[in-house]
Image 1 (cartoon, rainbow, N blue to C red):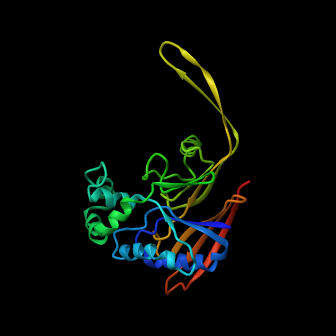
Image 2: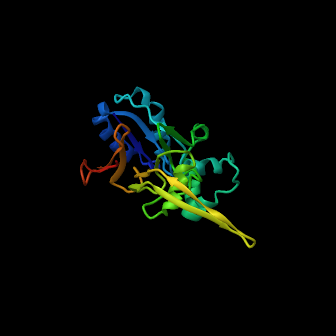
Image 3: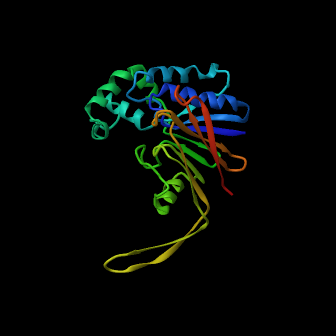
Length: 251
């Protein structure tokens, strides 16, 4: 049985429905559905998306998604004064004042209270499922991230596999077994080096559903054999509906 893992819906109702249609076709093979944040966005469809998630336990697929906070959810909490940050600085810098207004107008206070109660992430078996990293919801891991940073972010929660959605990319990053030599040098002396043994770890970027019009990506994972499968769903009147997939195996 597999897990379906998605992120980055960002209020794109049509993209979400296309992905869920694809997942429902395979529902007999899928035992869990995880949404790693960024459900809402500065769009009028955000409220409808949240309503669909609330009603998902009655869906034909029988999959009730587990949802954690993402970057857009964090911005909603900031706008409503429910975090330590008093100003939506990141949101203003990245998208401008008009987007701030749209997010405020399109995400109700009732939905903000739902967001407030979402988990930061999930720990299942030896897997950590989270929007950003163990350091911040805003931090994005990519295939070009330093192996030292990758190791630190995964090892902080003593996980072997980290699933993340912040970058919006689909990728599989494997750290092989090895060792790291560390030491500290001060003005007065040098402390002897220490060797840290590293066990194999993996980071998986799960893709994004709503950022690219007409194309949505998500991930299937089989915890029995560590098989990762990236799926792309195309939707829209001009392109019709189709799907392609690529598969990556991890030993």
